[in-house]
Image (tube, rainbow, N blue to C red; front, side):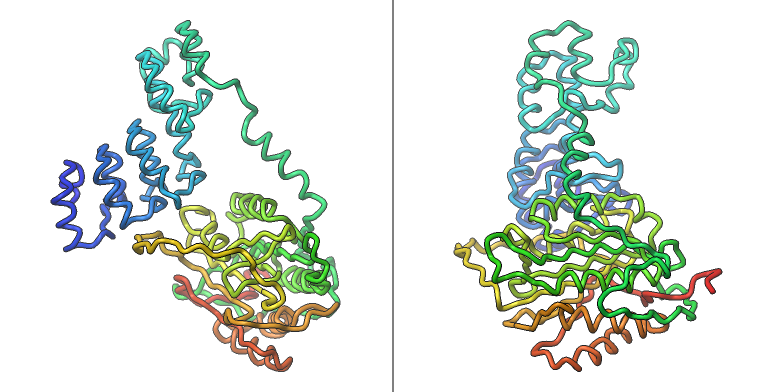
Length: 455
């Protein structure tokens, strides 16, 4: 199969795929058939395999087919991959490099060989003349000239026509990022893990101290400090729609911060972000160093919802729960690999109606995707029409969740805790039942186990 892909024998590949299926990988590298076709510059095979394999699937180095095509300078193959509407242009590999970063190597070589046509093509694809060129820099000529980027090489060789082809120098990425994030500082509040310093929410809950110490191959390790990281996003106000205000959202946020802080978690809360701010905040959270030390990560989003698939941001835009989960899968967030990741979606359904006209989309084949691992999602509703009362004290869902965590998280595993939560939730007689969905969550999980040295 792989030899046929490497040779570009499309007819043979089509025949063999019918026997093996597309989910075939090399054991040593984790490369799929799509990776192999891209690395061997086989555009026709790439076009065929894209019908069966997602362009975002990664090998053991965290690299997509686009990373390999960029690294090797296979321009036609890279164009085909980038034309796929589902490709993630910002996907980073295990070296935190995107495909654009890897384009620096062929750009460096194109400058060396004065290949203006290829330079132009590479720049169109996003090559950065100021990015370190990697392997080509190790050559004797580059070492002698003491250059590491394509721009430096062009300047040193006095190739002014090439220098003029390059865009003007830009600020480092982190400068733009700091400026973009500065607007969130007033909206973000940090959870304080210490018991006596936690803000008291309207419920003023007392959290039962942990006394059960758990360990073993079938239990997620939670012997870390902090126990976990919690990101809470509450949407309480919406642009030009005062009728949609969720005044109890602030109470929910305070109660959640209170409970998780007392259990030894750290984290941040955000209120009424726009869609772009939400994307930037969650992307920033994904790259935080604290995730390396935390035993788990918990993301809680409360807003108006369209079923259990979409939620409303403060600028009246809709984001999907699928996008949120995909952002923290193993290849996107290696800091949380093999750690439990819980997503809690508290959506008020029925008040907001999505008026966006739906266009008929062509039927797509199901492609091989990277599976979600060690994830559990808790939805406040089953996705149908649901309408529940939101008052100054918060939603019934979050209220029941906080009570359950405060009273039972010290000694109950997630499955048992969910059953206790349902008992608590039914006391409010809501018209729907929360749903818990498992995505590769293979071990027992305790929110608040006793850790070594804990009194």
